[in-house]
Amino acid sequence: MYLNLIKQNIKPIISTIAIIGIGFSTVQTLAAELELEKDELTLGFIKLTDMAPLAVAYEKGFFEDEGLYVTLESQANWKILLDRTITGELDGAHMLAGQPLGATIGYGTKAHIITAFSMDLNGNAITVSNSVWDEMKQYIPKQADGKPVHPIKADALKPVVEKYKDQGKSFKMGMVFPVSTHNYELRYWLAAGGLHPGYYSEDDVTGQIDADVLLSVTPPPQMPSTMEAGTIDGYCVGEPWNQQAVFKGIGVPVVTDYEIWKNNPEKVFGVSSEWAEKYPNTHLALIKALIRAAKWLDENNNGNRMEAVDILSRPEYVGADKDVLANSMTGTFEYEKGDTRDVPDFNVFYRYFATYPYYSDAIWYLTQMRRWGQIAENKPDSWYHETAKKVYRPDIYLEAAQLLLAEGKVATEDFPWGTDGYREPQTHFIDNISYDGHLPNDYLKKFAIGLKDNN
Image 1: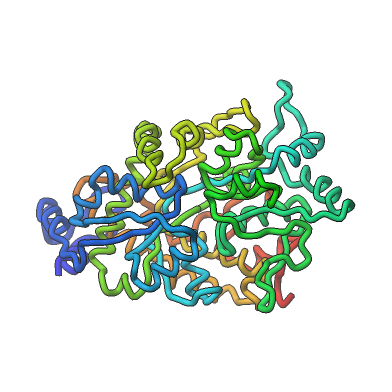
Image 2 (image 1 turned 45 degrees about the vertical axis):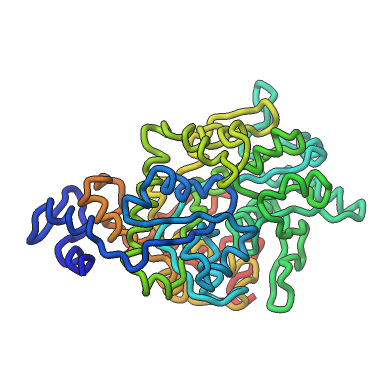
């Protein structure tokens, strides 16, 4: 009832609050009285830095402000997290951006999952073992101070992989899930350096067809120990598990995802479509709390980040040492031990419209699924647009934003009110290939390595 009233009386706001027919104080009252269909929720997450909006929304009371009583539960891996969201054991979860898309199109588990909230930008890196790093260094240009020039491209890894081949050995790297950002970022980086990361097919879901580098799934917290044991030679993962390798002295992060694709979308908050339809007001309340948490994480020039580090270091959240978490969360990143550099945007939660679920972000992930064979057949551009709009829900996001704006908890300029849901063409990729979400098939044609057309 209250939601319908608000929707009738608030229009999207460009520069000032324009409310038709009712006063500002009335809107505040209506927003506060949003009737929740369900107020006790269980939300899932994986122990990674970018689950921070959930922890902050809980610890700072933003969920309670919305009348929500939330239990946060860490999950053993991404598959279990997705399965429990589908069955309803979890009301929603911190998800890989590719998970709602993969599930909805039926890659792996088939279920309609939606997202109305993007949890962050950036936050990942690619790490190699010390022995691989020692071999790579000779191919990397040096700065005047002797430190490597960044970004480091996979061109420097290619001769190392070729040496492994000559010795009859496989070069192996870990990523966290077949439809993870990490899988696609690692593949993107390798292919940009002339290394084939392998294809998927309907009959072979290993993703290792024709591969120069064999990629396999490893749960995020196990990445450092798996590499230390020699099972993999490197990995792509979110924080704090790259910085953990530096602190343990077992590996070197060679490139961040910010350097692969500047301000790339990372995780999302996902719920089943059935859940969203059954509990629309509860969903809005959740998105409101998460938007506030993201704002808190970035406000005052990241001034709250050390408090966030304290929260995340607790065993019930990420459970990593504060020093490890702070290395990336406070605007720096350590590559080789002692080589700490300023990377203020390594973790972004709110600025640059980070929380808005852009259709073009969804389409990028779909193009990568097609590029590597997870989508077996060529699809017309219209299919990419329709699929993105089925899964990504900026309409729900903007309803939540309007309510927060009416309550005076956010600013008008924090949201892209006039967008069509597509980012401007993006050019900040490590291979300098531009991406326009309006033209997915044209984008796929630009790559030397990868499926396209009817291949």
